[in-house]
Image (cartoon, rainbow, N blue to C red; front, side, top):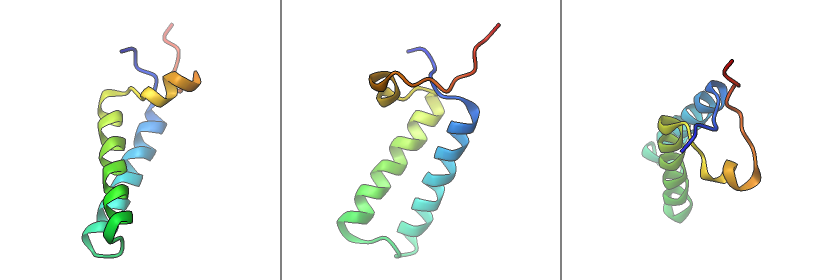
Length: 68
């Protein structure tokens, strides 16, 4: 797996995941929508930690800076 996520993309995903987690655990997001959002937040955290997004590979997107 070659990294295909840049630093900014990773930070944005972690911030969104944190916001979703706070909304879920404070009771703002509940039910099925809350569970789906929490699963998506977990996926965001996982992909941020490994710097690889399978969806980016499918659509040919790469936000990782080019190393010289």
